[in-house]
Image 1 (cartoon, helix red, strand yellow):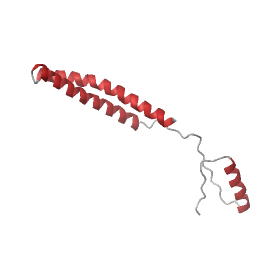
Image 2: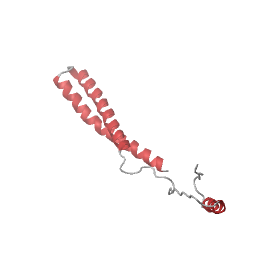
Image 3: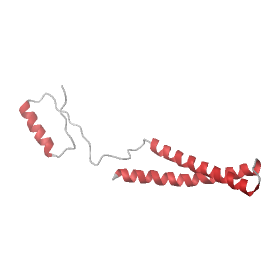
Image 4: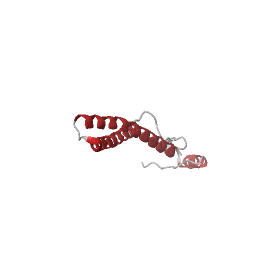
Length: 115
């Protein structure tokens, strides 16, 4: 299942970047607590935890958006090769034979073109 592998890869990358984003958030919270307050241990804890959550969310969101926006490779290719065959100006007798041959190869779907 290519979808499961893709979703698993997205999930792992988002979780890892969320964890990584929490560290700069905590550092920024500590810097704010030391420079502008609030004072005391409770103020330090509130600033660090709040900014750690912000860093966690921003890191995960940016990683998810970057991965989902990357179109350099096809993430979920079809289960089997896709081909398109167009047959035109074929007598009806030959067209029936062509259809039988195509159906014998077990295609995913067939369509008759509207003319």
